[in-house]
Length: 426
Image 1 (cartoon, one colour):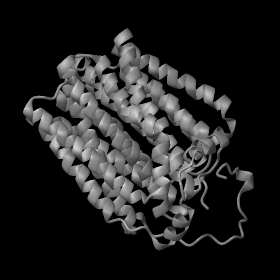
Image 2 (cartoon, rainbow, N blue to C red; image 1 turned 180 degrees about the vertical axis):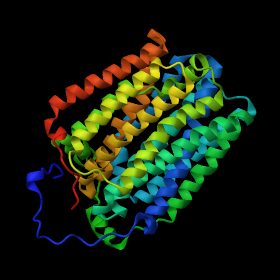
Image 3 (cartoon, rainbow, N blue to C red; image 1 turned 45 degrees about the vertical axis):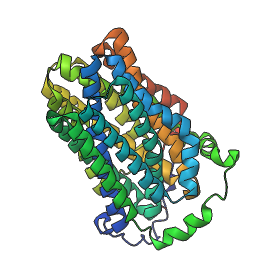
């Protein structure tokens, strides 16, 4: 277990394990890293273009929330199918096909923008297809990474992989915002190319020989209700894992303000599509700095408490952003928000993956993906709905306060999670 306390430290006389080679020398990880970058840049460019295009068409905060909702629904519907597929079939191939589905959806958005037949309803349908692709790709990629790495190297790999995501989230929205000047079709076509590149890179990954045999032996042999629902049952049997996943879900569900960024960019901060791209990139800039730091210097003791503090800072930064009328201050608040979120992501992801057997990781990751989707996509719908009722600024402030209350409540509900000292290094 990873809830090791200082007084339970290992025998000092035990020889330390041999040092592992740097991640930059690990070819499967490098290909995985590049594939993640390509996929995330494509997705982030697409998000900026869809958000700006929908808001220009309707000027409705509620419609921005619906974009998040239609992305989330496929994840919810497919959750148990996704997990079983990720554990039964080669995860590299599942992720490749998912990326190609997203490439096809991006190509359709480009064609619709060029042809002039893209409207609000068609965008929602295509975004739902993208959500279905992400429903398979996110948990599959999450479950694939541990099978490529030695367990002792996983926390650093998670941080390194997170740095790829955050690097892409910095580049993607800014690039999407600037390319949008040439028209949404240019953004969508570029996304299509990058999704295709992601699929190609995944096809080049060769899993290390030592990971092949155990993984193959552990694959489920057939579909059954108990097999399909095993991921949910496993999470329910592990209160600390359930607490870590649900803390992130409720904190981001309430505190997420990203769905309203087009409203803030257009109506409050008075920037254009390029300004929206920079606002989208700001959380990733803070997150990338923290991810790079954690990749070199993994967290030591008291990681549970650190995660709770980070989520609290996330809520405070959300409130500062909601009150800001200054573009630089808004960027700074979003950067702090992203940095705090990254600490939580690294602790939660490493903890959940290390505590889950490889044969279960696809199903557990699928359930985790629904929790994340609930916090992100359903959180966008919640933000849009709240903004439609109370206004954009009150919606963000309510979310920040709600996040702080969730942190206090979860400390009481999941004391074992708060007391987790170190991530497992077995």
